[in-house]
Structure formats: C-alpha cells, structure tokens
Image (cartoon, rainbow, N blue to C red; front, side, top):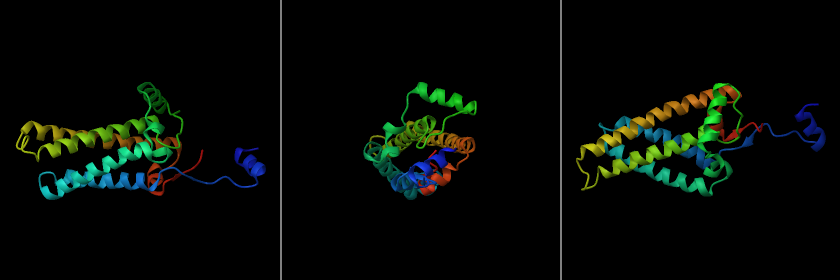
Length: 187
C-alpha cells in the first residue's frame, strides 16, 4: 500500500495536497525587497530622491525581517534555517550529485543565502546612509563601498535565482509559486 492510501485508511481522510509554509509577511517582504532593490539599483545615479526613498524602505524592511526571524512562525525563524558551514557544504555536495534532500522550509543553502543577502543589504543601506551625513559627505571610499555592496548583492541575487531553479528542478516543485502562494506539498 502507498503512504497516501495508508493515511486515508488509517485516518479516513486524504492528507492535504499542500501545506502552509511561508506566512504573508515573509512573502510580502521577499517580493517588496526584490522590487525595491531593483528600483534603487536602477535609479542610483539618475533619480536620487527615488533611490534614497527605496533605500530607507529597504532598511526598514530589513529591520522588520530581522525581528520576524526571531518571533515569526516556524519557517520564518532563523533557528529553522541557519545551519553550520559543514551542513551547508554537505548539502551543496548533495545538490551537485542530484541527491539533495527536500526541505519544507529553507534548505541549508537557501538559509545561508537569506543571511548573506540580509548582511549585504544592511551594508548597502549603512553606507548609503553614511553618504548623507556630514562626516562622510563626498567621501569617495564610502561611495565605492556602497557600490561594491550593491554589485555584490546583484551577484548574490543571480546565485539565488539559479539555486531556486536548481531546487525546483531537483524536487519537481515551483519554489517561485510557493513564495507567491505560501504553500508547498507536504512531502
């Protein structure tokens, strides 16, 4: 007998086709952050007021996400997806061998990417703010560090999208759809 058939026989009901994984805040944060970062990146030298407003909004979102990483629901919490470097490397080896286990929430590589993106964006926001202060106004090195953070973030975004595509292929489920609906298949 199959597991699903056993569950129907044992409990008399069919298991759910999908389960809730990503709460509305995490999904809204994710897509808002993506849009605002693209807006800030595109307007950097051209439309300063829009660039600055997007940057402050990103900083506010990051602050909320960090708090949510400690008090939010299970799959939003850092304790659910931040793993040791050894675990991340072992997971990446398994990805390369096409035998990586499926995770309902973030996998170890995805959790590392969340942390890396948050750190990189915090650096971008901090240096962007510094450029508006009297102490660092016109400091070329601060502008260069700000641009480096932003460009490194673009690189991380590319790796993130590739990772989503690989995981979606390997586990035969759309992670993009899951980040829109908040739902994934249970196993």
